[in-house]
Length: 206
Image (cartoon, rainbow, N blue to C red; front, side, top):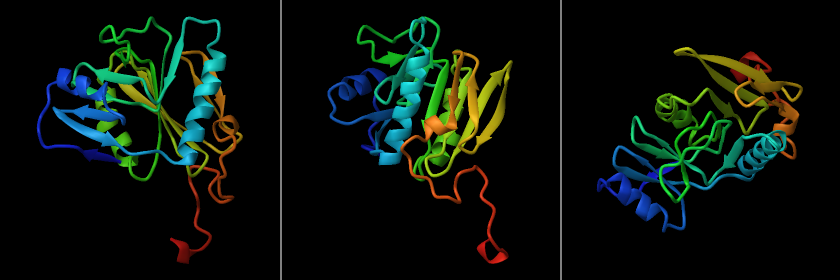
């Protein structure tokens, strides 16, 4: 969940100055600063699992993966955001000498929660789509084994849904493959929530 800190509008340089001194993370949209809420144990475990596996597969290659604290700027819209995971296999470009704001991500992954799901699917993805470098956008459920993978093909975004712990997801842009069993390692999923679509047991459950 995001909480608007003040109704005052800030210039980007004012936001960055405040953000680099702050004890908590905030995103910046249209001149306004929004504090970010803390994450659940499951959210943190999934993020760690994914980042660790991608990092392992990128060893020895001119690729980089960052999690949680790497800020991304969408130059076209002026937004500053903190994806859960971001990766690139091109030379990383940063906004300034602080090297804490990435400009050219190729892969962005967000782990969904009840408070952020609508935002991650809607407005945030709309901003991310303006990144010319971005080829993959991934939404990972934390309450069921379900991953939604959007891939840019020319000017279209194509969705592939991967469901169940036996599933795999491939990121051609960075030449990595993840097993959903690895993504959800050490995450307790209810027996009836190990796939994207959960069918009701009876009409009364609908």
